[in-house]
Amino acid sequence: MTTVARLLIALLVLPLALALAADAQPRIPRPRVPIPTRQPPRGTSDSGWSGRDTTALSQRGANAPARPPSLQADNARALAELDTYAPLVYDRPFPPAVVMESVLSGLWMLPSTGDLKLETFRVSFPPEHDAEGNDVDYAAQMRLHVRLTDAAGTLLMDRYYIPRGGFDNRVFTQFGVTGGPINRRDLARLNEGDAPLVLTEPGAYRLEFLFDDRPFWSMPFEVVRMEDPDPYAQAGPRYVLRGPWDAFGFIGFGELHTRAQPSSRLYWHAYTQLDELGRTSASLPLALGLYRGGRLVGEAHVDEVQVRDERRLEAWPFRAPGGGDVTLDDLEDGSYEVRFAIGDGPARAYPFEVRGGEVVPQGRQRREPTNPLEFIEGLNETWWLQPR
Image (cartoon, rainbow, N blue to C red):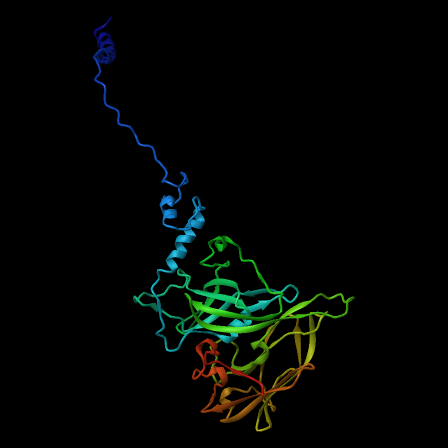
């Protein structure tokens, strides 16, 4: 065996000999530290929920479940924060109000079933700050909600709304439904879907709009049930809304929401709905004219309108008798009236005044002495008129 081979064998055997020698030495035992096991709080199971001592809570009289779902616990904490927000400061030029056209167009009822929805509406001059000087984030803080009550004051709906859509500026914000009914005092409803509200009971109702729990605008309306007295009739009952849709028409320049100017065309707007059982639509005669001192100064360019069983907002531009558009700039100061009729319905006259080149607000569209809860907001682009 060569010298090199002997050296290689020695290098391989040496580590093994050292390891065997170490095992032959006596070992000193090391003390063992017990590892504590995780114990759930008293009154709860090891569910991973907040770890609150619900036994102690119950001893203090709190009405808390022992094992609520984690999602419901999160919602409960979120709703608890609602009451911790600083109060809103009403420091805008005017008190907040719901834009009239937005709520009348946004409140929708399916005639065949009575399903009712309020999907969107606009609010003018919503508070921008709270009492601590913080900016109000309506998307993150659920602070605007709408309540629906019946004539007896029974609460039928309490739903929160957040900013939606492209209408958001210094004057007004558009709000839309959050996706489900929410009631601070009924946490079980937090996880419900956006089920439609069904109103098939005829009678009077009221929508109330609130920031936190402070009402700032309200609107009464009525649900009417229409039914054919003939027991052999094929058509079922129909449910329709009555209220401001029937009591008002309005004039405005340009198409709605287009930032039109007084030099734009003057329009007449009215809500229409077919009040006949058994038909879903009909083409009816239209009579529309704008008069000053009994003289025709504007008229519709059509003489028929398609009316459906679902309520719709219609708009007709005024044309001068000799041709061309009628604009607000064309109206001299004085007294005017719009004469309007559809089908066999009554012909109504809606008077208004023009002064200094502007339409004079009337009735509840005048801020003084109107109660802010009843103010008709037109955003300086629509003027709401009632018939004589």
